Image (cartoon, one colour):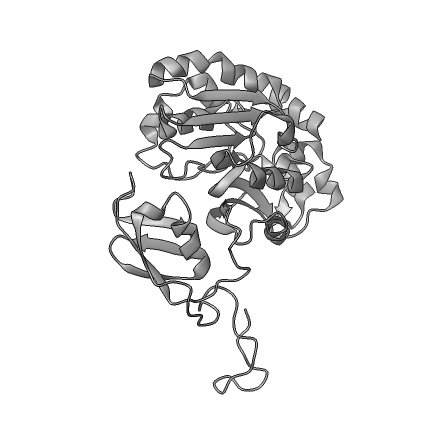
Length: 346
């Protein structure tokens, strides 16, 4: 699979125009604050972008960021401007041709930004322990439509967990399926190269993340993928594919379900480019100044991370009120309201 991916992204694809599906295309609405950052990036780097989402989380000033499968470096050079001169971005990729483009324009971007805070390393994202990367040394790890290409996804998430600081996060976009992929699709070289053959069944991903210590995966955004090539669509059959962005926090105290401790947070509106609201994920759109009830896990994601200074926190963990209502898990027992055997399903 490594040879297949290196050939596809190193030799067969010369630009994003050569892609045969929209799986590795980013249709995320471009926020206004990101446009000037991308305008500073060389056209040759931009033309070889194969991402499927926006992996530029907020509040990165001074952070140390790792980009897994950085390719030609578009996200690296965008993130470099976000972390600033006091931060650092490290890009890892296994494809010589992609890294050649990224390193060719290293000096160009250093001159453009007025500082040099970028490094590129050749390596496999399943073997990050073979690179000179210290455990617990990164605030944020990102990846853009690359994990699906890995033949050992457990190894990737295990290494991410090791490299993140406590309270750090893995913020990444990838391709998922609504069911497990059959061998005929997995072994199709074009479908694999187009980020479809290696896509995980979404629930298998959730379980994989838990297995590697990321207990509460948070879905940030998603969209269905259209396979417009009729030949490839026929090969995929009835499988539905999705592009999705998740954030996983390196917090060992997270619980397997959302528990209610009567807590709430209040966003101060102090993050750059987010004066009115902070969107943690699809279910947590926190407006400035408004008391926002949260479960214990959400509390910890905000309190024990780089976001803490931008919130006021109400309550603690001294009193437990059961499961947090509306978070997908319900009371399994019959109640007077629903009768025996009539409790609502999850």
